[in-house]
Length: 188
Image 1: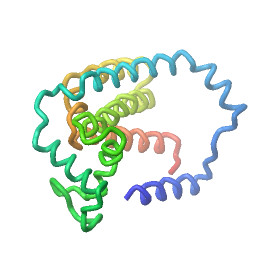
Image 2: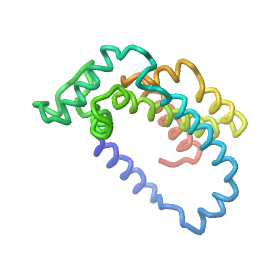
Image 3: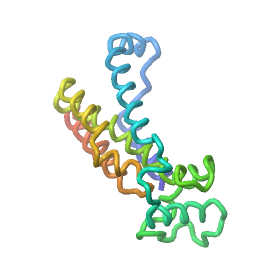
Image 4: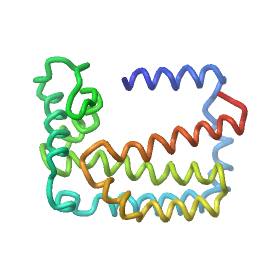
């Protein structure tokens, strides 16, 4: 699944003959945008801390769904899953539990490990909303969107639960943003 996504991205970048920017070209851009980059980094870092702070305690109950995420992720780690391409909990493909498995591998079988994936995805969604809003509406509106989503209670809540629901806020924003930029530039 992840290899397919990587190959698709590679094929699109190859088709449009995309190249990494040169180091000499990148330095002036970084200098021109350093305050914006610093401000965004500070707010995104604050969004991460809001989502990560006492993650093992809040929300208080480690709900059934989070437990199932952990069980399926542990199954991948200990090799007890008979078929990696089977359907796991809530009709999700077993391979979709890889991020949670990696978190369990690093942090052990804890609530923090199961919930960390949602924290990271929710934080990346905050950054994606900034980039998307800036591309469509402008910098001022993007700052407002960034600040709002960083502290929006509903988004913070679902960014702290160890279920896959929060991925929609990242994937939808990223897809729409890339679609808009592609249309704006007339590129793939």
